[in-house]
Image (cartoon, rainbow over all chains, first blue to last red; front, top):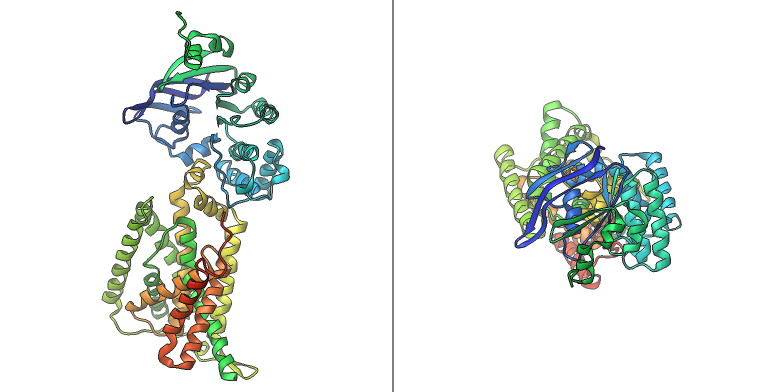
Length: 242
Length: 288
């Protein structure tokens, strides 16, 4: 099985705070992987390392067969890595359509009518088509989360990184978001998803990785992982020996 | 009465030149929050490049623009990527200091190369040609300058709001980090923005050189006029910048009509009045 993304021995710390401690894992092409871990475990930092917003102090990242450890964020986007942010960060002064168009022209390398059509298709898929001409700064939370997804998808990523995209949504909103993400995954896009809303994660991913203090502490099929002692201890504070 | 309307028309046309001074400033401030203190000296540099081109090739200044514009754009790209990109960051002081230093360097390099003698670009018949518009005599060159200013502003507006390049400018201006994650190379986008700004500076410099005589020391004054036009019009609004240039131009020609020594001061007073009444300028872009 060839890995689309391969992270090996990744090392990063901010002073005494270790956010990646010899982290290694592979993600196969077409897979959907969930990442769990308590707050401050280094989940978002891991995304920052994968997208190139942070430079690791050690280790290697390979993507699609190429070593991207030293590549710029822009180059990695063009190679096919896109992410959504936990706290939505749209280009507030531009319309929803223009936000999508930035992804389509810069990330996916489309131009002219083709780029516009693709941006419209993605907006349709993420349910934002009706808001295409709204200024992104005026959207509601759900719409902003959908815009995060739209902009990332417009870059035609091979690997889509989702950072707590279900957080703060109502149950109904969450369900429709899960349907959209399942749809994207069914289209062949590889997904890594950080999420605290565990049932949303379980509905989509095929494998879970648990990290704490920058260390990978468990990895495997979602159900056994959720029932394992380490995860219960981290999430419920239960000492399994008692 | 006709004299006063004449002064107003002259002022409006002069405003076109000021808008050209200001458009490049407005563009680079809008895209990368860079205040370019060397902007005026770059205008004068363009005028001298125009002079060298016309003298060496024996061509009309308008033809010289075909060379001066790409040369200035090239200088802009290299300057941005080689020097100015390194100064940009959370602190606004380094770009101010570096562009101030650049201003000193350009002035002295021009002084060394071309001496302090005032020079002028000769446009031939167009320099003195005039039209009679219902009793008001209007110079053809100021009229052409104003037309070019409107075309340049319209062109920049089109690039900004209708092209992928412009979306890149706006995306980077909006959020640099996210824009990079979306595949935009910030260093390159800034380089292209500066290249575009200095292509406009080339037009401004050559038109200035045809209108009046210039020497290496007058860049500072052009910078001030450019700043005033941008601020009167409202930051981030290109058509506002044109309006700002026109207001400044009209204030100056009316001031000169009252007393010839009053020209520059009248412009500054108009600027201060606008600043006192509307601190964000007359037509600020809608804040988000």
